[in-house]
Length: 71
Image (cartoon, rainbow, N blue to C red):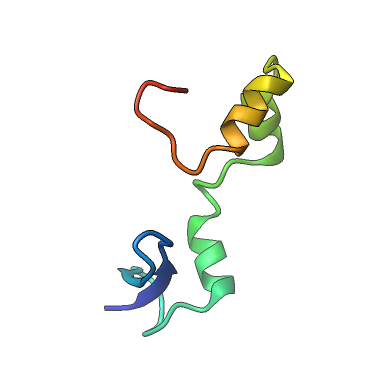
């Protein structure tokens, strides 16, 4: 099955992801093509962050992980 190596950071290791429609190791351009339909557009991101205060953005981007219910 085609795969992609993903660095998950914690624990510090590579994880193999199987990618349908890809070669043995999925090249980055092919991966980008496969995920393009689900990656938010710039406009989607503007809508998502619209109305947030600077303190909200700081909390979002300064957090290593998000606890359930903390967002």
